[in-house]
Image (cartoon, rainbow, N blue to C red):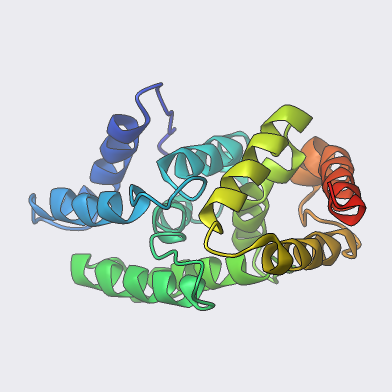
Length: 220
């Protein structure tokens, strides 16, 4: 199993990981560059304050400690790279569009159909982050939510970045919607589905979410 690391130069590091990944499944040496440029165009759009390459790198970093527990690492890697490639705050089907794009591109490169289907399902699961019968999906969606359990200052930066992404909406619309999201996660028996992520992030995540919800409720 390939051990993935992410050096400080995030775009170059991610491109290297992605290139090696794609070349395992296609003889077309130009394809990794073409697909990477497509991903780069998506993740570097000016509205991407949080859902950008830094987020992709963070999800990868969160998954590395549990890499040995992942049944299909390559399918999970593709899921990480493609899960937010389509992101428009005015739309409600970003996850489905991202999954469809992944399905198309993985099929083009010759990634096995059954494993492509798993990637598709991993990405769709990020819409609601509910428990899955697939262990890899649970690890992936937990990693996607790992920002929730980061130290308070990092979590605050994340909330500011999300607000910037939704800057087209006034507070009168954004704040109630954000509160609904926070309550959705706090109402779950566990925010994280897997033992590792629960142990690492659950307590801090609940503290962060509760603090943000209290702040929203106070009108601050």
